[in-house]
Length: 91
Image (cartoon, rainbow, N blue to C red; front, side, top):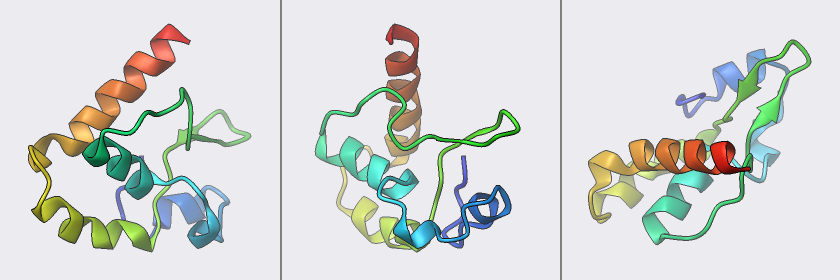
């Protein structure tokens, strides 16, 4: 998981234009906050060398503002990873 708003891990794994990715860590965390459904594997990029990645971009820097008003904000990322794990196990 790339948790850096600059997207350095995403870039180093070959996705240089991370600002044009439609699904990133920030968009998935927003779904958790809004209690929107997710699909199994949605937003996971697969590298040729067998590395899977949840990408990040500059949108992640704005997540701080979104989290200020979110219920249980300290558990948002944990909730996302738990839900992702459940989706991947059952699919």
